[in-house]
Length: 195
Image (cartoon, rainbow, N blue to C red):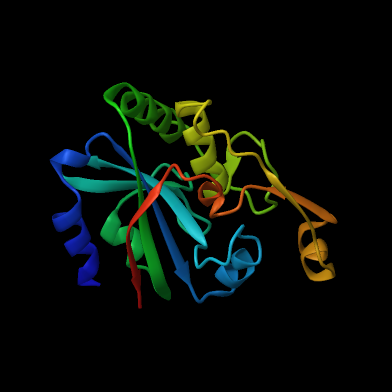
């Protein structure tokens, strides 16, 4: 996937140091098929991370359901290539919000605080479980703590069908969709790639 290197080298650089990026991807795995049922819009997004430019490259922070970092945390820090070069990935997109130095400093501080904690992936998909988070919940929390006025994304509720109800042990799911940020026009899509 050389396209990842092209997006980094051509579209991201010194001018983007005051930009918040959301990186979304999709795969053909069963987990992704399930996640698609819960998006707000007809979307390919099934996993999300939040990123910023560091030394002319995007650094992506995301909560993984199948990997852990050296500290045993599900919160990963990866380059864009690592984030999108996963088995079965068939799509990714890069979304950007241009901000200011103060807001970027706040974002980095919030991400650093999460990075110092041991985060576990929340397989129950329950909101506000402390150190148990899923990918979109993490990104939503980081944005909210960075700027509560601008990034106030409210959880959605969905009545579950019998399959999901049995799997999640409840009839109603309150959750943050992977494409939660598309509800408002704060982020602009810069790039997308289908494979």
